[in-house]
Image (cartoon, rainbow, N blue to C red):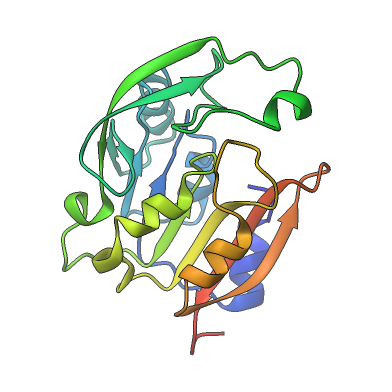
Length: 206
């Protein structure tokens, strides 16, 4: 996370009742969630080799999270992920500017994965209020598949782009336009200024 969760919680008086994390990779945030005493958590990670490491990490820190080995988007079925061997840069979208930004990252693997939607995976009476997304340019499609789920979400922490890091990825302006019930309150850019992270808070809570 480019933005400090600790700082955001203090600055915006964020009260997290539950977390939906889309794109958990190998569980880098598991300890942070544990330290915040967040127990109502569901984490989605589609790549099996990353998912296995995620399971191990969550078990190691004793985080009471539900783990789901699926990708999320705006449809249900199968999808192909293009990835580097670590899985960190895996995306349903083909890499574009990423190839110039990280010339030492080689997209040599493809993975056939199950894809679902937030609304198919999350019950309507859920108690999650914080959505964390890191899906390498696919964030808008995740949101489109979760219109009902979003009704209970107050905070969205997401990766954002202002260049085609991946082919046809959503731009930060697209997310701003789609999230009409939210206000973007914080943005942090990577050194390249092409991608970063942002926090959106439901209007009325800012």
